Length: 73
Image (tube, rainbow, N blue to C red; front, side):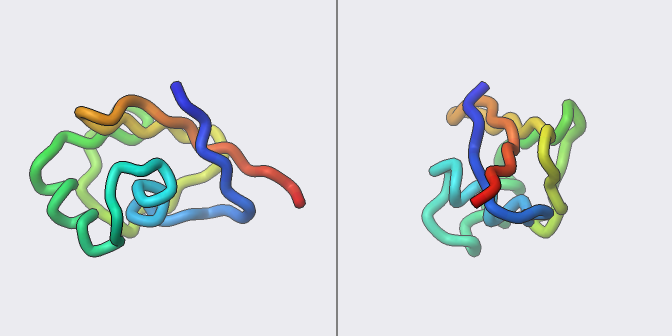
């Protein structure tokens, strides 16, 4: 699993997908979530506004698995 660093939590799933490189814009999140069975902590998720916190796992078909990691600056 690849860790994706964020500065503050929570982060919306759509923003997380952008940081992970799965999509280029937040608007593409809706289409990705409609097409692919994205899993958050092992459960299917289709809400692009889903809030993610440190330690959450996100699995995106074709892109891999990611974890949310908070870094303090």
